[in-house]
Image (cartoon, rainbow, N blue to C red; front, top):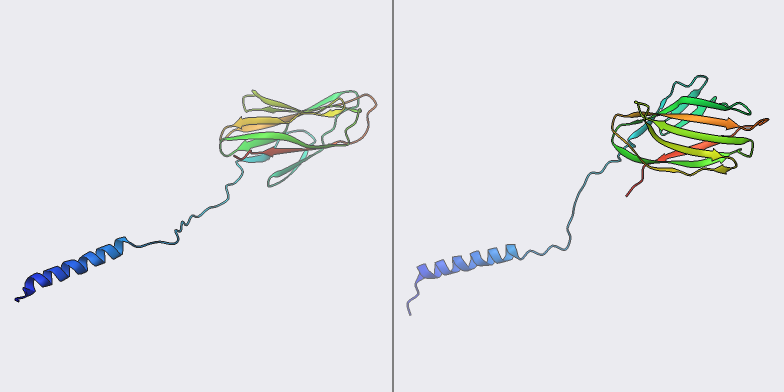
Length: 175
């Protein structure tokens, strides 16, 4: 029997090539990996001092404390530019009443009104009325670059005395 070495060599080469292709395409992975770099996104809202006469501000990052607001017994005092809120991106936020301490029947009314740069009303938050805490203001939309002023209106009953502390919370709802 005569063996054709040339044909046999071609067949062996073809067989080895087929084995290599079959082995490479039959690779089984037990794990898959995905790497991603993720950073914290900053809050797109920031406090700025208003121009309210007699007021002082302590702004520490996300917290703004206003000192010096007063209201006359039996009357109302309006601080038309107590503090400002500036947006560095489009945002929808809620203005929540976190706490009202010291308020009683002597405190008649605390209202916070939001106005844009053209003095258009953007919302009214009744913090305290009569003898009860008001309701939160939700789904307020502000546009990148806008600065709004927060106007505070404070009314005490006749003969009132004391101090009320209010804590409001601006929050960005997350989905």
